[in-house]
Amino acid sequence: MKQYLTLFLSILLFSCSSDSDELIKEVTVKINFSQNWDATTIEKSDLSNTEFTNKLGTELTIEKLRYLISRITLTDGSDKVTVFDGYKLIDVSKTDELTHTLPQKISEGSYKLAVTFGFNNTDNTDGTYQDLNSASWNVPAMLGGGYHFMQMDGKYLNKSNVQSNFNYHAIRAVDNTDPTNLKFEDTFFTIELGTVSIKNDATIEVKMNVAEWFKNPNEWDLNTLNTMLMPNFSAQKLMAENGKAGVFSLGTISQ
Image 1 (cartoon, rainbow, N blue to C red):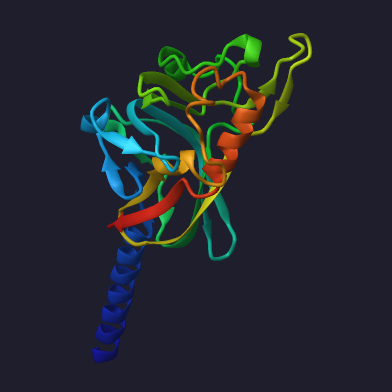
Image 2: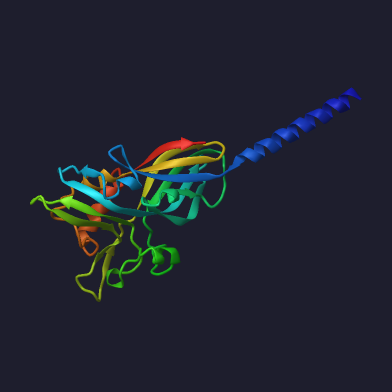
């Protein structure tokens, strides 16, 4: 009788332990997108108010900052890749919409995290996404259609000490010298953010250092490159180079 009781208790404990383990294996992951200027946080209240200085010494204010992240990817220790379909339009003016919940749960563990800035060519299909259409995120047909990757608008103090507008808009680079034969170059890019250890439900911070868009590897002169950048084939490639070089990084993990 004692042997049966011991066996019963062992099975019961193993079953409870297994059930408990199973419960905590599948967790919800959220990505929180934060923005800063060389470690100084940028929030909604900073828009049109806070003055920043870029690497060339140009003073500027940011009035609008929106950008698109897609194809969030987690790769586990066995090199199993999970790509989460969908995208997130981050708008600094919408404080309550800076966090994106991944559409499916994952198992606890260590993962390499990667995200794509903008849309790849498969996803960047003209007129497909109604929410982006409503957000005026479209690229004109004369520039190949599809969608923006980023819109950063503001004012800068030009060489004559006069406030002037800038529109730092990132799209797929297009050479429209011949409107009947548009030539494209990819300017979306995937950022490998590093390894994250996920236990329980987690919120992972992805940081954008806005100052980096203006300094590395290309020092951005707003007196030369300020507006009408969408049809500027060379400017779009310079933007992508700067974006790849260190704009995005991994922040804190809360769990």
